[in-house]
Amino acid sequence: MTPQPLPVTEDWVAKSLGPLTRRFTHHDQLQDVLPLDADRPLAVVTGFGPTNAPTAGTLSVMLGGIEVQRYLRVPMTVIVSELGAWNSRNVSWSQLTDVRDQMFAFMRVIGLDSQAGIAPVQLRSHIDQANLVRCGRIARFLSRQDFLDHHEDLVDLYQDHGLLGSEVGLTNDALYTVADILGPAEQGAARVLMLSGLEESYFTELSRLVLQRQREAGDLSLGWQLDLGALYFRVLEGLGGYPKMSKSIPASGIHLGMPDDEIAGRILADDEAGQRPLLSAIELSSGWTMVEIDHARATYQRRRQEPAGWTLSKQRFAETFTTYAKIWRECGR
Image (cartoon, rainbow, N blue to C red; front, side, top):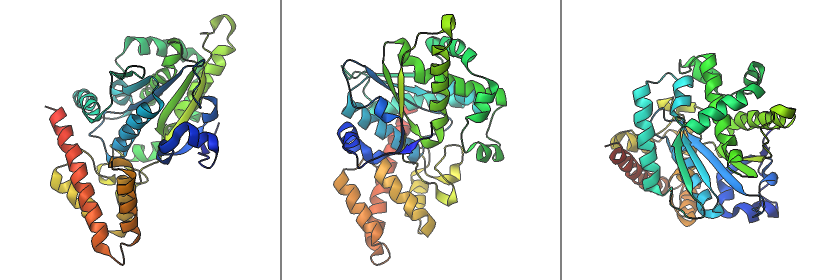
């Protein structure tokens, strides 16, 4: 199933997602899991790779996840995938575990509430016995060709930068993530909503293959009856001509591990190619109100006639982002 543009003009989308709609561009069978239905419990799954400090793009997904939790009020699992990253990226184990722990602390501070009553949030990593057992149970339903057919579009870019692990490591990483997505099936959920970037849509496809094949496996079936839908966040364009802000390519954006002066320097830069990505960062990674974001959009549109207004918007965003960076640093102590 190819992801489809989110039909924002349709009433059922607006009723199901409300103000969340602005954060997403595509979906995959969203109608199978929304709107909410008390007789068919829904769980949300999302996650992050701890290869480095979060970029503005990663921060946008974290803030989006908080909005989803507060709006839908359903159980959510958030995975920080250190074991997957160990297999798929050339990053030291100590760095991955340090960033993992810092990421957990950061998400709690900015509002991902694990004590949210009827909408609990489970924060966990890939070092999770249940998930590793689930990997072993679902591996029989996938072939090597499945992983060759379904992979990240940017894999060649990462390979060119010498960032990727081995083929077996990449397969393990994908298998861990499929097990993450299908985890709620073991816990009684009838529906799962996966939240990710569009470049990770192949995880949805692999998960559906497992669901289909285990249903057809007779005595080898896992007995999972699950509807799976996905929402894909807007991709935050990268600086320097890169297609996205990537943790693995530092020149592509801003991240929370940068010194304050470097953050300000990149945000306040005047190169025309970087201005649209910076507006997108304000729209998605600032946490500002819609009134404040609309004002920033207006100054962006008038930036050639009134450059001072857009500069002020960027200065305020630099202050906002450095505040998040300060929180990030404090969470690492």
